[in-house]
Image 1: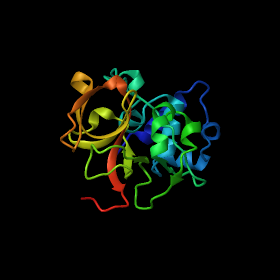
Image 2: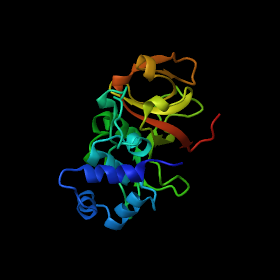
Image 3: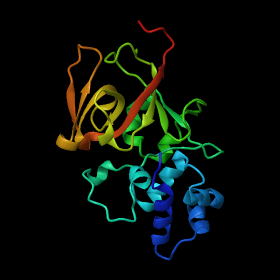
Image 4: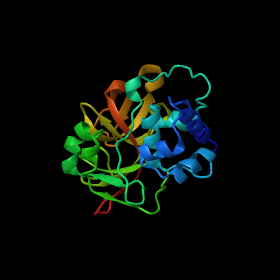
Length: 232
């Protein structure tokens, strides 16, 4: 899929006060100059960790950096500014994204530490070779019995969602909220029109309930799970 990434990167760097060189910017971001050069020329696809660094550096969202021609005047975003978040993440010695594990014990503190790099860097990490290196994944421990056939303690692999409004109705997501904490639910998306998500459980004993946009901290799309017992 074609993106505006390489031309946006050139435009944003050259728009900086003092016309920052590739070498200086690469040094500030802890990215190799050759890597930054290949990104600007379109010869290489960016790693997710580098995308996050660049988006933070230029104070734009990852979605805008990839999909919008930032050299053109942009209409105001329908999302509140506090909805455009940058993910705290960790990388290995090869500058590849880690998959962090949020265990049952860690879930309780996740809503306070999710944006704190010191907190995230203390989570256990690992790699799964068949998952895309161009996307960011995290693993969360399932709590409760609201999403059968998943049982409490099952580990859910989830992909980070940058643009919440594009989430399709019926998508299973890990939803991180200020009050509810970390929950796994089927989401129905009314953010664009009503600033709300409706969260549904697969266990019919639990009624659907709404979450306002400003209560959401993170969204992660379900991609798989691990359990040490066979599901009923």
